Length: 280
Ligand code: C2E
Ligand code: CA
Ligand code: CA
Ligand code: CA
Image (cartoon, rainbow, N blue to C red):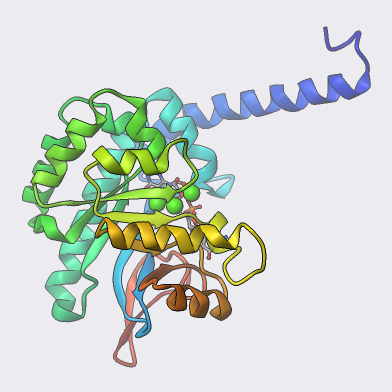
């Protein structure tokens, strides 16, 4: 059909085809990547204001592909979700992140970050036995549950009938639950009435507008009020400038995450009494 309708449509279809075959290729390579340990974790600081102290880290998966180089999780996590490999990859991510956190606690003691926050996809959350697998990883790695946060998106929570029960079971272990990309889903506020949640991660799209005139800046202000009233911890994501951080602090935010404080990096290193994240 595309051939008859002219160049513009043809180009569009070709681009889509290329994207589809790219996905298929990536999907096939994910299996090899797992078997050959091409994945590694990077950790980004979550800091308290105004001290700037690192109180937690978010674990973010990285894929070092032998030919393509570093592939973004924004490109391969959706593919792994689609072909189901995210269940196995996600299990590895959880174990690796908990083991690393346990290692930091053992080696850094009181200087270690308090928590590691691990992203869990919709597919993992709907998997029977997910809560039990979290308990098993905590037992195996020796990490006390209070040092783990599970990050889920609203979409993941709505995706399956069992997600809420699963989250309750995870939370009953003593693990905290964070709602990721908060405010970008369909019924963010409604979800807060029923979901077992401790932390709201306020999406970068709202943080971007903080301190600017106009309607969009109002959302970050409203969300800190909601968090406070529901006794949830708010974390502002994607903070890139000091001006944003100052305005967020003024609005009442006490926890922030973003390039201003540190990019995701493979390890923590000790430097002049503070833990900074190593460069790549
Ligand atoms: P996310 O969970 O919302 O993670 C935050 C993303 O924002 C990360 O991108 C992080 O590097 C980036 N970021 C942090 N601060 C800033 C900032 O100041 N400016 C900008 N422009 N970006 C910032 P990353 O690591 O590329 O991950 C992208 C997405 O891929 C994640 O979004 C998450 O949805 C998914 N993902 C990453 N790691 C995992 C994982 O281990 N498991 C699962 N299921 N998904 C993951
Ligand atoms: Ca996240
Ligand atoms: Ca997020
Ligand atoms: Ca996001």
